[in-house]
Image (cartoon, rainbow, N blue to C red):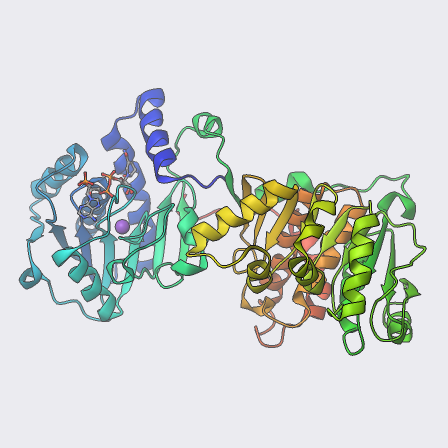
Length: 508
Ligand SMILES: NC(=O)C1=CN([C@@H]2O[C@H](COP(=O)(O)OP(=O)(O)OC[C@H]3O[C@@H](n4cnc5c(N)ncnc54)[C@H](OP(=O)(O)O)[C@@H]3O)[C@@H](O)[C@H]2O)[C@@H](O)CC1
Ligand SMILES: [K+]
């Protein structure tokens, strides 16, 4: 699914109106009616008090449409116009009149004295600002947002939590509405996927308003939200005549005394995702551990307690390096020589990323399309600090472009960056915040590349499946009891889930 910027959204609205012949007011009616249905399906006519706060643009127009439908269905609804400007859009005015025609006059809010009483058990619909926000809310509008936030009432935001920009950072955090749930039109918005906005965005979903798909395609959006629809076509079914050689040989390099488990997990993951063969290259102290805990894997050893020589004989298809490796001097010196000589595809994680950060001159030796899987701290060591999450994405893009790398930044919405293209993951939950989770991801991505997946697809697919295991597991287990080994247990279900039909959304 594409992620459109505000400019692209406005263009797509306009183009759809021109191409389909639908009027702007009809498009608004269609979009806002879907929001009404969303609420109606859940409330089923309950007499809870609903406050609809409308701006004076088209986001406000949506609010007026929702308020009208709520009235017509007998809800206890109060509608307000937040009068921060004398301007009105045409569609706003049409719907203002339609509301008046059914005998409902919105209350105009001109200053703080006009704020209504809002109780914790009420519902607020936020239709103050949407895609047309051009500056931070000020004056009584900001005060109103703060007032609503302080009530801790459930807030349903239409299109955007008011005060949030789609493609730039919030400058005044007190001037953004904290939405309980957001119904956003047509595509997810980049701002929803970034950790700096965690206070404003809770849950959200996309409401398909039927904007012109060909036009959107022609915009060539660079930001993508990865769901099953994007993943399924990447899947490579197995050929009847294949054999284990068809599915490649993954070599996992890593481990140090006390951290052999990381290699064990990565090796198991590479096997479990389908790598034909898996070898591990570890310090001698890890030999028995790997042989006993991963009997399917072959093992070669280096020095006693930490890697030093990197003199393995395995003829691998791809190497995953870093889990549990440590950064002691001899490991770092050997790593430098290894990187300078290596020609095989690489997946680089954990301490191997830290070693690259300590010696950035090595970056230029990495083969094209090497996958790096940093968490934010590892990324910071590599690219320095950032002012905000948008700048962080720019820094990752530059790193990816400068060295032809695929960067997987791990987080709530893990993002895979390949040059200017970004792929934000939709699966996963806090269960994955557990020791060894990253080692398993390294093994999965390595194992997919071994089987012939393009590195960028291996990264996107691997991240999706890794997250999906937690989403499936959480139906039967608690976040706390989920461990990295549970990811492996649920990989089969995560793969099978790709072929299960989605249950239709009842509102559609
Ligand atoms: N057919 C369609 O197009 C459809 C559109 N849809 C809906 O339209 C929404 C976009 O509508 P929109 O473009 O009118 O922008 P919106 O967010 O309502 O407000 C803009 C107004 O606020 C003003 N303003 C901005 N910042 C301000 C500030 N800090 N403080 C004070 N004023 C500020 C700004 O004025 P200006 O910047 O020029 O001063 C302008 O007057 C979109 O999110 C979706 O909900 C759907 O119905 C689907 C069909
Ligand atoms: K809004």
